[in-house]
Image (cartoon, rainbow, N blue to C red; front, side, top):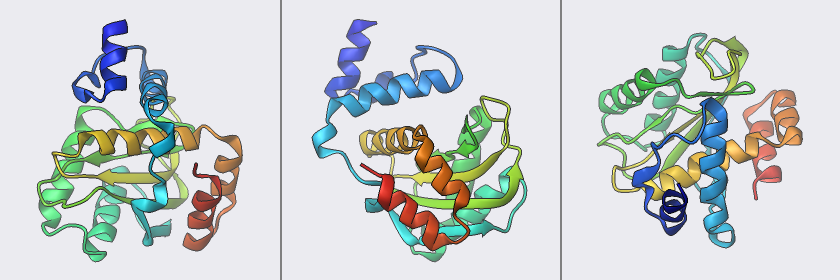
Length: 193
């Protein structure tokens, strides 16, 4: 196991599917390792999330429709040339294992062929949405990440940052209180590292 941890810290992300625990604890452990790797040069969420890619409230009320809505947000912002490829890639990843990581957050993600850069869309639902989350609770915030296939490292780092930020109670409170896209984006700017 120590060899695997050393590989993760060195940047070999091929071991990311190895099981270290269950559910959210597994992801949190892996993300902690990745974040420890290079705190000084970590990206900020606002480097991959544009204000125009934040939607409050989401119009959709069920999981697949929310994913489609956020894909449309990214397409409208010019981040995807092929909507169907983008949508099918994210939905296929979601079918392998739910991306509802717990505490009201889902992070659907994938590597569509039509994606040119690491990008993010963020939405807040008016009412909680069932997402088959690890903790069994519905979600209110959905952060979608997409990247080209050759950007595994940045993709995993972005997942780690979202997960770690969500562990901050003050951030979750700010997100819960946000009623507009501007307020949601401002909360990210305030709490990101």
